[in-house]
Image 1 (tube, protein in one colour):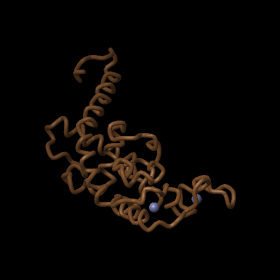
Image 2 (cartoon, helix red, strand yellow):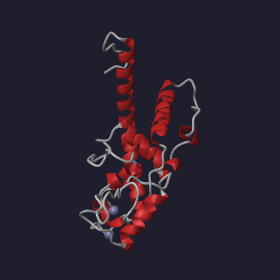
Image 3 (cartoon, protein in one colour):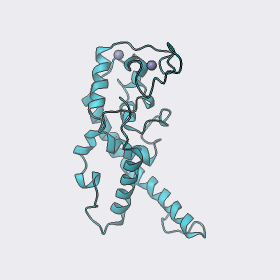
Image 4 (tube, protein in one colour):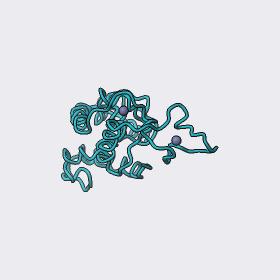
Length: 196
Ligand SMILES: [Zn+2]
Ligand SMILES: [Zn+2]
């Protein structure tokens, strides 16, 4: 759909529609790049054993996961207790060291899939909640794609520092202005470090 096609009569609402279309187009454009780079991250962080769920790899208590209301009962660890696994602990450590704030979003990821699925590694760099059921980059939204690019330090080697800290390199380019504006918005919404 052409971005300048009037959708409804109200100008402000029409602008929001255009912004949504713009977000989707930008996300589509970044999808292949994100997939290719996440595969490199997957190689760098190493192979997990493929058996440990994330609950095994997180000590109890760990904020904000183990919100214990009653002693001896942890809702996060109710089905799995923490267990040391040198192979997965090494992958976990590498994921943490690639996180801009050192606080990956463990609730989103399925650690038993780390061995075979690069997206489960990428999900550690998403916002803290709300993405656990998203099974691919294609299913993710713009905010998810941008969050990974901002939170995973690997992408800081792929992108110009000017993209990561505005002002835009080319003030005349409407696409760059649009993109950077949303990068800043995503940063403002998601810069709080999550607990380790
Ligand atoms: Zn716990
Ligand atoms: Zn393991």
